[in-house]
View (cartoon, rainbow, N blue to C red):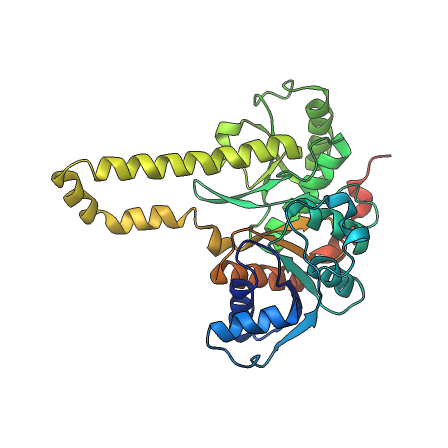
Length: 338
């Protein structure tokens, strides 16, 4: 297994990216290629006490960097020698099995679509992060890649995320819900109503485990394993959940630090509080896949540290080994609307 890593992407590049890649190569017995400015990568590792590249880790030089201010639509044309574009071209040409980047989400989506391309028949790639929920995790698809969608695209998101949840996350017959403003089948705008009909038909045929409409409040409560929505709604839902989690953590801390008595109470339930905080630890998840791209591409969080990068590579390995993309190709006829 050979994983390509954008060494210059993210807030903590290249040192934390390189350290995470080295740890992944060791822990997962894989080859890792750090794509980026070779001298900067080696200098960052030297500052961490690593004089030479460990076995299984190599550098592919790329002199340019995609930053957050670059126009995603022109990155492939204007920054051909950037670590992101060079890495994706290597993936396209068979120089690796998967690509991981903590760089700009929009640029990564655009560059992956233009270089690696989508699976034939897939209309748009979708970003599918995993969120904690009651009883486990829920995959949100799409979470911001496509603000405007067709009903066919929502159907494809459902198939893609359901396959990922089953093959990579290990959920048997994942429950698929359509995020809507009510649970009744008559709820929603024309897009949601049309998508509901397509998803219900797929469910009746036994191709999806469709459980119907789900409201936003039901998603964190575990109403489904896959929450399907357009990228606008998905991004709002994602940011709302993240913001609520931060608010709750802050308020709980205020409660426990209010007096000497509450501080003692905190000490008594510290382990439980640590477990609660761990539910929202993005470092453990590592990254989210761009579903629909013809080869595995993982988007790591922009502030990824060593642990997050290592887990993003772990996720890329699992995605590659799963054979999910081949399954999509074999079943694409069920994901398209005549």
